[in-house]
Image (tube, rainbow, N blue to C red; front, side):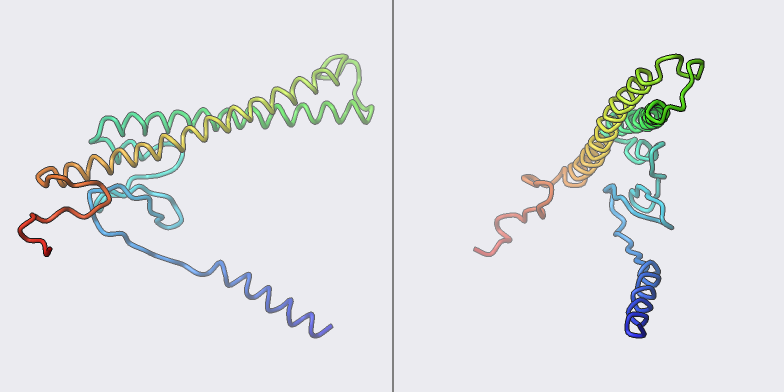
Length: 185
């Protein structure tokens, strides 16, 4: 028993201390948009300015100088809000449907209850409607993520082009080319 107690104690201490590790990486100040975490909260950082992250915006302020990126950021925010609302509605309908079907199965429903005389039918309609609404919410939330990534990529590509506008044949992600006479052949 003592051997097991030592292992349990070691695992408990390891589990408790593993959450105490903290990392703090500060990316360089560049005109590019980065997603950072400040005090446990997601933020969007451009240069040395942080914009709030999360479901209700912040990205639109970070990419405001690039109209195409701003359109994607606003669409991401809209899709995220719609997805959140659909998730709440779908979860409520699933709960009501499950409760109605459970009361029907147990036999505790009465003919004059909240669902009327046919609790099983209403329970099934609520359950199926809630599941369909939840699936719709998943599509909206995944669309929000895609628009967020598009906004970040379009903003960063535009900043790259603005930064290297005077350098011919520069490709995003690759270092700028030196003039041919400076290269070693």
